[in-house]
Image: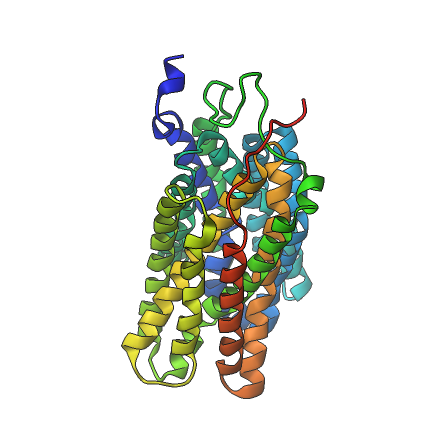
Length: 409
């Protein structure tokens, strides 16, 4: 009984640390933070276009979107730790397979197919279930801290992959990056991660049952579809803006060095957005507090449109965009757990992760296409501003969290 009275962080800090490390080494940040460094090398060696190369990430993103509910189902059935660590191991092997890339671009795409088939289990789809099992009172902050792993990954991988390419070449550099899930994430996950006992879990009833609804019940709930629509709108609006940010900055007349500064600010604002949003979610029940945060990027889109040579305004726009992106990542996991519970969390979160992954996969190409046709990003940025506004209003419409019943035995 004494153990049950300990605070959530006292009980679960090692698991939270393991989840943050697992997310940092997994298929959520690693592919997106490395492709920009590998693309010029591949283009130089094989003459492929950047559009052809970036299609690989789209293949992974779409496959991940489709498979997320399946990995969520496995996490519910076999345990999040087991599924997450197995996926982390297989993701490392799949990423290492890029070493076999040849002149035929299909070999490159084949590796992305492998990453898509096995990697999505090493993302917040599974790790967030573990965090939610350990935390309730401080769940929002804990999820934000877990997702800091993606921000840390972005800061670490950039110099690591640059060094590895310079020292060993792009092919062997893939092996260096593959060592992150295989030699860092996996062993530390085995050491730090575990499922809570009934006495340790904050949402387990006296008879050992977990609260929550089934996937079928969630799909019949109007709130699920409001979340789904909000997620796809905001993820689409943000994804393309983030990937194309260096070019957007250049459209304002600034050099590559200033674009790097903007991207660093975006990374820091994402981190801050996760922590601030998590802190607020633990103190206010209604998601209406998140409405202004999610609507802030509408202002950023207006600041980033056009060619105003004001670097301060561009920096403000980039900061607001990143801050809201950090907030949305927290919200998907948090709201799924509070509105639908943990009994079938993996499947439900997987279904909500689907629009996020799908929109993030296709959005960069749409932004790029608009730039090709019109000569700038203004039209899609104005559309994105409207998407941010609608997406924020939809989240605010969800209302108070329901009282969930224990799942059937």
